Length: 253
Image (cartoon, rainbow, N blue to C red; front, side, top):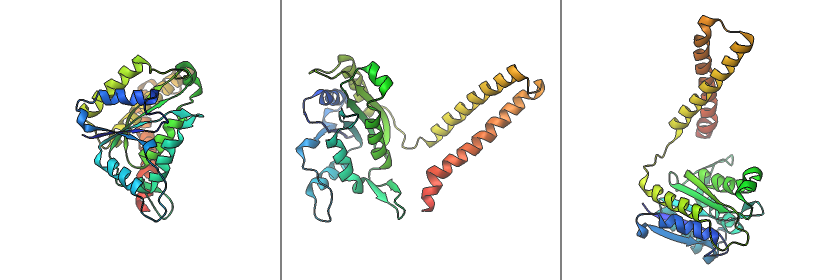
């Protein structure tokens, strides 16, 4: 497995880069890893003419199986360097339908891990979610391109710091070891539907149990029959709607 670390920060040795390096350190085969420092490239969008920079970046993306996206959070959003990279690579990452739907293209079924950093503390970030938009942008771009997310890592409290948090560095290194050793599946659809069924079953049991306890609306002998039928009908209807909007809507176009 070839792993590509994509660094979208202004410093090649900053804290974000340290987390990326720690993740790379955990990869058992060091020769399988390559660093792509976006600031080294003059990335501009395609204009109908030759674009050797994007051609080179596209080749690197094609040759890798796993991407580690590392970029700081600035002004509550993804760093401009990484955002520009996604913007300029968009026509090569997705294909557009006549109705402007974006569908996965050549990078479908690759995997990625995302890392970001921010000035504020973990406690404050937990309640304000300052890094949320960063991950949403990364996920929107890469899942739209058909990549599969493995996990995300946040490094907080970076203000006036030159060294990364040792505990977070250790976490990154552990994930570096996991991404090449762990068997991955390219399709998690069945797993998601099973999780959905379990959530519906649990919520229905709690709801109907409270109804029975408070109002006594279900006959004692029919409670479980009512519960099972409710869960199955609700799941089939909801799963059908999700399947339609996720798959069939695009397939018809």
